[in-house]
Amino acid sequence: MLDNFLSKYAKLAIIKGVNIQKDGLLVINSPIECNNFARILADEAYKAGASDVVINYNDEKFNKIRFNNSTKEVLSITPKFEKDKYDYYVENKASFLSISASDPDIFKDVDSNKISAYQKGRRVALEKYHSACTSNKNAWCIVSIPTENWAKKVFSESDSCEAIEKLWDAIFNVMRLKESDPIDA
Image 1 (cartoon, helix red, strand yellow):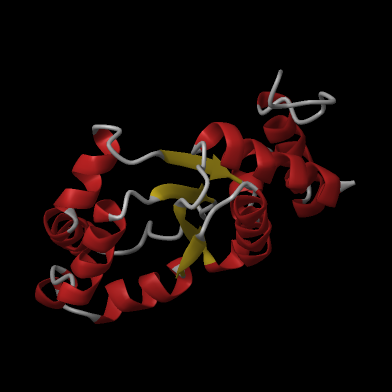
Image 2 (spheres, rainbow, N blue to C red):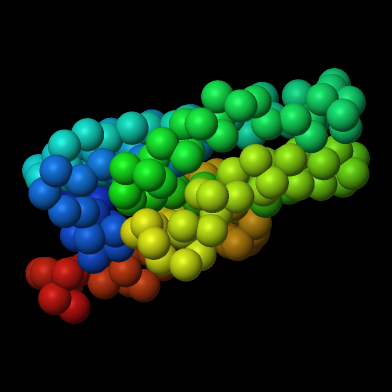
């Protein structure tokens, strides 16, 4: 049953969320833990006519290791190839679909100055990308799927499995995935 809902969710995100066009380029930004859903999104994008799909994976557990072991100076640097990559996407009218599925407490014991330096460095380097999205020059959408720690934070009285199930249920209701046609709904 979950697979059926994930397919409906992916189709909704592709058709309504980013409105992928024939021969369009889609960039999916995904936590590494969400690789299965990222692949389902990619498949739906190709079915909808995308010419290419790129998936950029992020690993917040590794990011925590990096934040705890690198200097602010190192963290503030966004490599030129990262800027060039996002500039290329913007210039080629890519649509951006991000999966938000994080551990809400993962960075609670990380120096906030290091996180700020990292975020500022990326914001400056990827200004063209951020500007294109905030001005709706490029289509963008954010979707969420449950992680164990997020689900436990929201449904703290439940065990992990039940909490994840409850969070899925909340997402399915909000996204109208229980309807026969969530796109129409």
